[in-house]
Amino acid sequence: MMLRAALIASACLVALGSAQASTRAEACAKKPQSEWMKIEAAEAKAKEAGYGVSKSKVSGACFEVYATKDSKRFELFYNPENLQLVETVAK
Image (cartoon, rainbow, N blue to C red; front, side, top):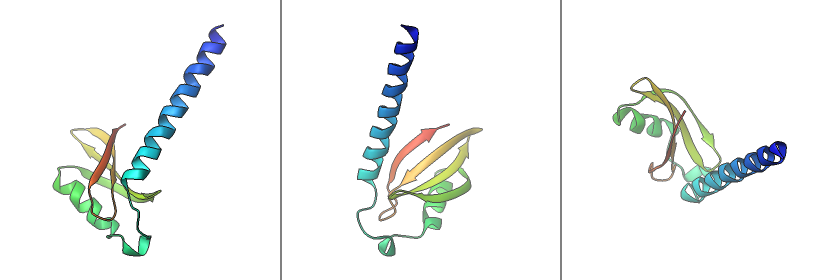
């Protein structure tokens, strides 16, 4: 019985993660990458907000910036068309 409950809980977490990623993707770029802003602009925006930036990458249709602030780690997701902050995930 406990195994079944654990499996159901795991499945719910996976579904929730997929839903968040889907929502994030919907809030990000619709245009081709050739029309996106530079990823360095997303890093600069994070720095302007007081984050220390360690690295960044393209994640699906978003820019993902790995950052720290107040000794905490974050993943910041930006729309590459307008650099709007779409999601902040504390790690």
